[in-house]
Image 1 (cartoon, rainbow, N blue to C red):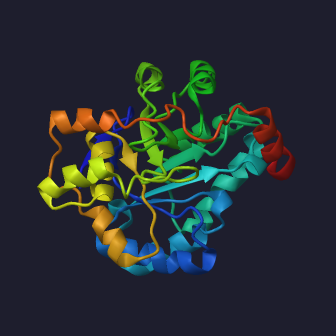
Image 2: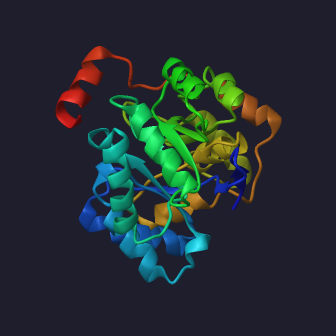
Image 3: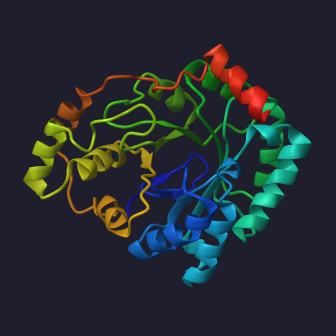
Length: 281
C-alpha cells in the first residue's frame, strides 16, 4: 500500500473501498471481504445508512483499530453545530470506534460553517483525526476554505480518467488540501473507462486491465481512490495496482482522455440544490 500525508501529518492510504449504494444488509459482508483482500481504508457516510455494517465488519475482522482508516460524512439533515455534534457521536457508536480517521461534510449546503465548528471541536477532542469536505466545487471550496480556521485536509470529488478535476488542483494546493476520488472507475453519468482501448493498450504492457490502469493513474497523482464492488474477485483486482508504475509518457497520454473538469453533476445547479434541501435539509 502507498500513502499520502495530509496537512496535519496524518498518513492516509491511497486506495480504499467505498460502500456508496451498498445496502445495509450487504455492507458487513462486502466490507469483510474487502478487509480480507487487504483494503484498510473504508469510506462510508451517514446518508448511506450502512455505518453499522462497517462497524460490525471491522470488529469481527480481528484487525487492530490503528491499522484501519475509517471515513464517514455528515449529511445535510445533520448540518449545524449542535446537530452535527450529535451526529458525530452517533457515527462513532455505529462504527464501534472511539475515533474517526477522516470526517467530511457531505454536501456544500445548509449551515456548513456550523457543521465545521462541530467538526473542529471533535478534531481537537480526539474524536476525529482529520476533517474535510465532499463535493465542494472550485468556487464554493475557495469561499469555504478561506473563512474557516482549520483548512479542509481533503476534498472528495468525482474524479477519474475522464473527469480529471485539473482546474481545482491549484486551489487545493493553496490550502494544502488533498483530493479523494469517488467514482474512480466511472460513477454517475460516466461510461467507458473499463472498456477504454487506450487504457487497455497501456495495461497490456503490464498484464493489467483498463480498470487497474485507471486506478494506478489516480494513485500516482497522489489522489485517493475508493472503487466499489460487491464481488470479492473484482475487489482483489482493483487492489492489485501497486506492482507497476506508469511512465511519464503514459501518464500524459491518459491525461489527454479528459472530458470534464468538474464532474457530471453540477452541484451549483439551483434545481439540484433545491432538490437536496427540500428532500434532505
